[in-house]
Length: 195
Image (cartoon, rainbow, N blue to C red; front, side, top):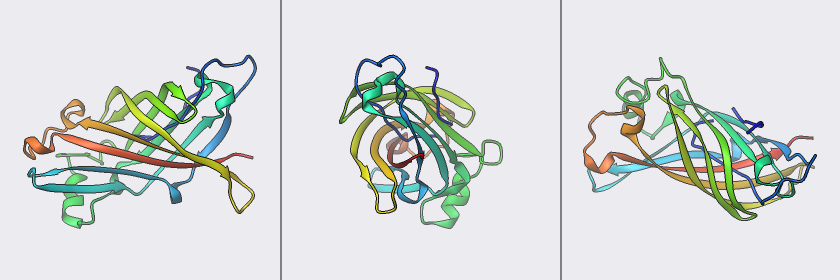
């Protein structure tokens, strides 16, 4: 794929739509709005309840226009892993350590989409997630929330995506018990069309 983005995630995620790309048609460029986008996660705590958090700092771009065809749609995200926030300072400090995100060595995580399969309302978005120096192809379920004009003369589009990540796939092996081996990711992306 020739058009790419530069975010983990993850992702987070996501866009694209329709089937055949007309010759000479290009998708419009968008910038992810960090004030109205969220990269959240949750995992089981001891199998009893949920522990949830989010990344407060990230940026991204996307190309989106259903009329341009699936191959013209893509998204790229870069996440500041040190911005992890679970609403508990001591836990967040531990998450930034070498036991988890190792932010001194790996200050960012990225997601760059490579393929979309679906229609105007959503589908499957595949891309490369790089976390802790490990890159793996993952596939998100993507749903378009809506798109339209904003009150400030701009145009926006919103999407949500979900993915279940196995911590061990990215070398995150700190023992939290069997209930916490997987992390549920949710990306809620609102992007503004570039003028």
